[in-house]
Image (cartoon, rainbow, N blue to C red; front, side, top):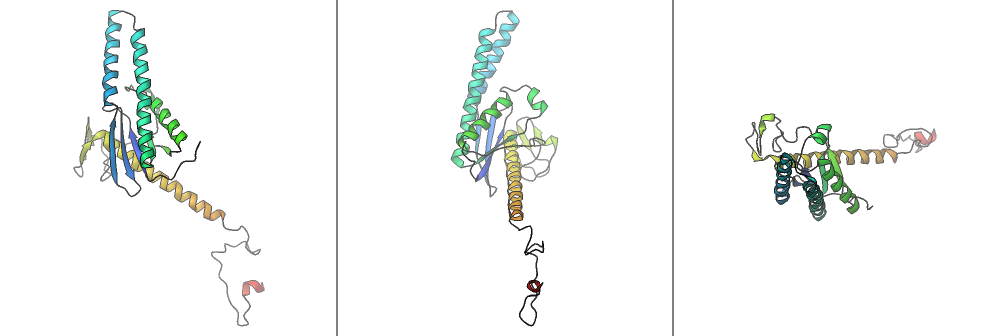
Length: 232
């Protein structure tokens, strides 16, 4: 597996019902762009197959054929979406961020299994050396990506409208931007911590037998030109 590159930004991925997946890119400088609503065609096909499956179940006829078709379409859709997202990230030289799945995320009914899409994206990222991160999912859909105001009433169906600043946009897009922002913050904190640790590791444990940090030592010069520290 190739080593993950240094990302120029992060691609936030929101998985939901209105759209199978929405991806939004944020650069390390905070610029938002390259928004994609994925899987519109496949969403329609999956809904059609689910409807036909229910119709056959009501009539008491065998549903094996329709179950097989639905499973095939869902698996194919997961593969298509994962490939689209990873190719987009690779082109932008971005990392990919998704919400950390909770028990509710696993059990709630979605058009496509969220854990399958997550695994498919993560595997493709690892193969291509693309940074992948999971971020806390709490309040990503109810927090304004402009002013940061959090309120459940901000979101109504497909629309997000902030009760504080009045910002309005697609609800899934808003969540994707928040996911990307969280990834940038977490990545920067980890990077800062790693740099601090590296600098600390570079300091000798003992400095000329004194055990002092060389950065904080003060050298006092005596009149005869001999350093007091050296003179012992």
